[in-house]
Image 1 (cartoon, rainbow, N blue to C red):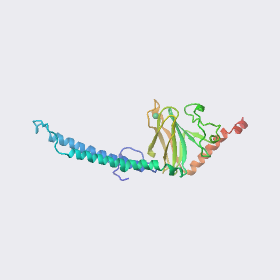
Image 2 (tube, rainbow, N blue to C red):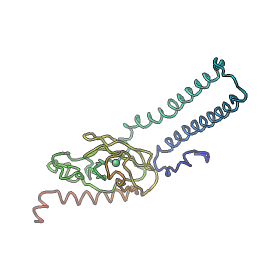
Image 3 (cartoon, helix red, strand yellow):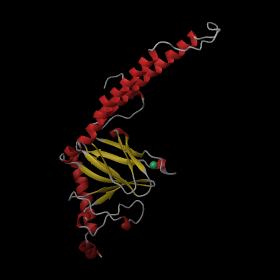
Image 4 (cartoon, helix red, strand yellow):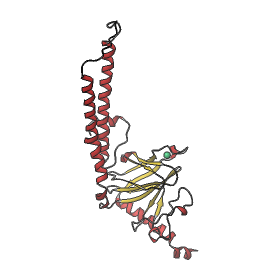
Length: 264
Ligand SMILES: [Cu+2]
């Protein structure tokens, strides 16, 4: 990105994701167009103030504009906006949606993100890589992921109040909510997704640098909305694997019936 990027002056935090540069670039071109429109309209306004001042035009003219400059300008703006949409926004969107299949093959980390009033719970599939069955009837509170421990796939699943993901590997976050509509937003990753009750909607990105940051809720969801800042850490792949293995093993120990009986 060059030093004349409007996105640099907008207070947007540094980008930490593989696709984020494209988002910033789109923000840049949209702002350049808006700056051009602002300057153009301001000059036109000033021109009108001088050209049509009362002292030079004592008699009103009712015929109006006879040339087609304004039509040509309007067509120019339409073409520019079409270029923004077709040349920048659509390819960016295509990149996001068409890579869904290839992301699956790149050893992604999968996490269920559960929003609630007012915070986030993270559900990891554990060492087997398979999420346990979810039973909404088993939820003991609105922070509960509702993992059904009768499903063997769920025994090694673990939950965390902090999102930890490895650097350089795609992260697929399935966004859902236990109560109202929230919006899971990670600004340094240039990504966000609405959390809709009863639905799990995937969003994915690849962090390209280590980072400790906060995630926020991007949808006004109640009086505690402003406190919905969660913690997120992008760590090395080895540190992530070690952490996930440790968490998974300790949850497996806790969830396995024989172990529980033996410790009683
Ligand atoms: Cu909120």
